[in-house]
Image 1 (cartoon, helix red, strand yellow):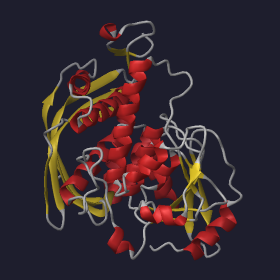
Image 2 (cartoon, helix red, strand yellow; image 1 turned 135 degrees about the vertical axis):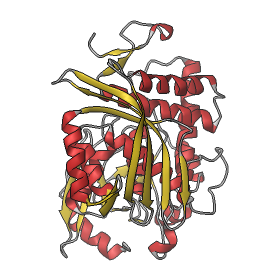
Image 3 (cartoon, one colour; image 1 turned 30 degrees about the vertical axis):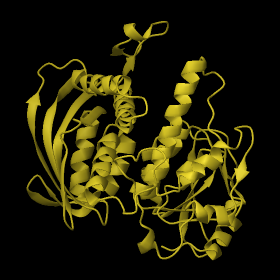
Length: 411
């Protein structure tokens, strides 16, 4: 879908009624006067916001275009939304009648095709919340880490890294709205046919300061992104998990050796989800194998912990998995797997905790300016979120770092 400024004008006519909420993000389906649906992401980005809720909103609305009414918020949350926008193959558009500033600009650049009116995208320095108690050394380290993360993300999205240099020159108490020429210069907006601007996120982050890769991400790397999103979604609450599954499978699927419909797959997934409402599924890092032609075969080892509070039962183990995935549609064509280890009388998510500890060791023990260290930190945070989703918390109030450990929340 090509988005021109004629369509932007239609968006302005209806989007001007959207409130500029200052809370966690929400989604509002709206229509152009031609009946074309699009979604408005409204409010401040927060770490508690689920990017998979966007996948659910897209699935229910059928929208292929995203616009924003947001003054910013948490940088990492905004980048997570941008990655999901790119993974789902959505376009982004922005008008001056509503705002997309600060962290929101990072979410906006996730669009495959991106159009924006002059003065509708605002940038400035990232800042820490007022209650973040950091000494001088910690502050410098945190700023360096955040800068590296943003640089890697801009590179993923095919944006000129000089945009970060401009942003850093603007105080966090001020804002700089980009001109049309600047947006084109920094590749914030796209031009030409959509087929020629299918930039996709890179898995291997570039060294900060290096130019973005000239070639699009390989299908193999894109397949790994999909697998990570798949297991992250399956580890969420049932409504969000099932919304992602609905868009993740093709109309017809070879499911464990049997040709079935998408609805049949979803019924089986729903039964399992109801039986085990708390789930943490995490692919063992380094076990992934990908081979792509016109379609991709993805395999690996996934470790899981599932719990049913109502039945007071838990399940834990490891399984081989194999998917055949169509990169053109972002959908699974075939799925199979087998359990390779089941933990009898499982009481805790020890396998997932062990994965977290491995990544925590690489995160804390690696070089501070290393891309692999930053990726290990990202993997640690993703695994930690899955543990929290199944009711496990890290550390207690008043504990020092060496005292902290994973435990059942509230105990």
